[in-house]
Image (cartoon, rainbow, N blue to C red; front, side, top):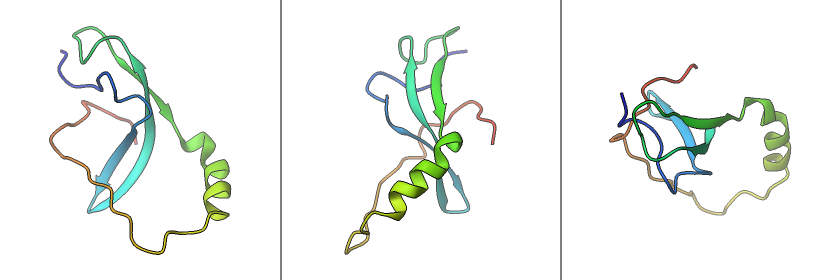
Length: 83
């Protein structure tokens, strides 16, 4: 099919889902061949296996003194992602 995937420069970026306004990170963009090329696929890291580690690190961090907002766009979507 092509046209729906991550692209160069996306590596390390989050894979997120918006469920009724609640943004949840599901994974991290790892790598791929080209940019949304037909017959090729992107590779993503599932972060669920590292949840305890991440929660442990975040749990010891000092929260910011003000709210931090991260913008996102609904213009690009994944063709499928098992949740």
